[in-house]
Length: 449
Image (cartoon, rainbow, N blue to C red; front, side, top):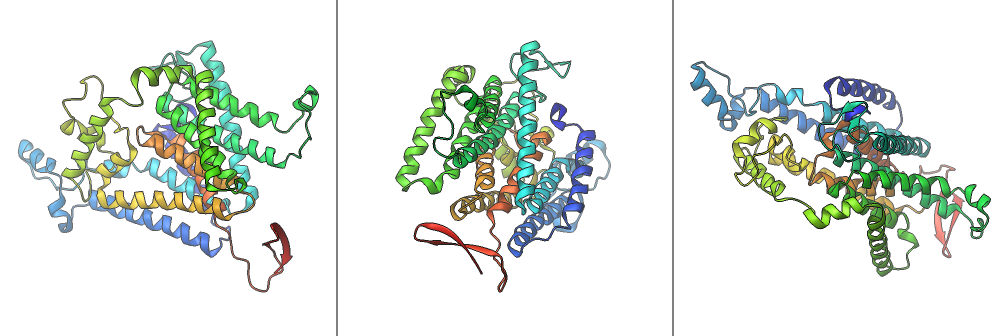
């Protein structure tokens, strides 16, 4: 997706494509459990729409919540203005694109992900496209790192950004792609019989099914580290560890084994970062994990929330509202058009009630994915991928804004939709002849209902 699909024409195209996909996907039959989850998502969307209407529609119910900017503007212009809670008149309605893309991608993937073949196809499509973007990014960086698709970069002229404007978004994108390829590799390892491949026979090694996903993981990780993004790389590494532990959770003898495996994976990730991520390690050692300016920006954003706690200042209004609350401790260089914390920014724009509801929904997705990993005995790849991507994205979005970039949010919510759907096990109908699994004598056997 060129330039992150951040332009309005690209957003309109993607809304039309995913909207059409949503109409076609609606013909798929869903089990009652999946229907409940989908209805919960739509209920949240209804709350979102209600808040937006209250923000832009003059109403006696919101007289005490109007933004003071309208009274000040009316006095300066000596004219009557309809006061509304939003700081901008139509901006909340014009800023719906990224939200629509996220909901459509999540809904379509959730409906289609009920079938294993469709869920697998979505994961493979993301993995292959991400691999191609990684290869393109590495090659274009080696040719001329100061250009992006033939245009001169405005920033990050010495780092890999592939087709993104921002290196941080590129890092988390390639990191999430590496999570998918890692699970593909783990599935191949689990399918491989002991002694199937002789490492001394190079022909056998080259023909092994382990080789393609291993190469793909390394390419995506190399592209991720070449961005020199601290938060994106570290969050992706955590996502890789979570996906690894989630996939092999039932293979560990005890919880202590899980802790030891997680520690070993963290050590291996640290060694890998030293060899492949020298630029990231150097930035972390010199600049630390974060900078003081972002923490001051978070405090300023919280002041916005305190000023408009119920309905916020209006969706999409942050770049115009933030200067009035900007802390003097922040450097005067640059313009803060993002809060570098998507949750805080949305809460400041939409209010605390909807912010709390958003946090509860996000936590519910996390719980559902963990439950899917703990309860499923087969085909845990989908939930493991989604959980790794969810953890990596959550960590990164707390210090940056990857979910506000459509090219990243579309694929992330598609992966999470399939993972959520695969985490729900449908109950077999009574009297059906469908096979069911039961555990007897330590073995999973199949018998008729």
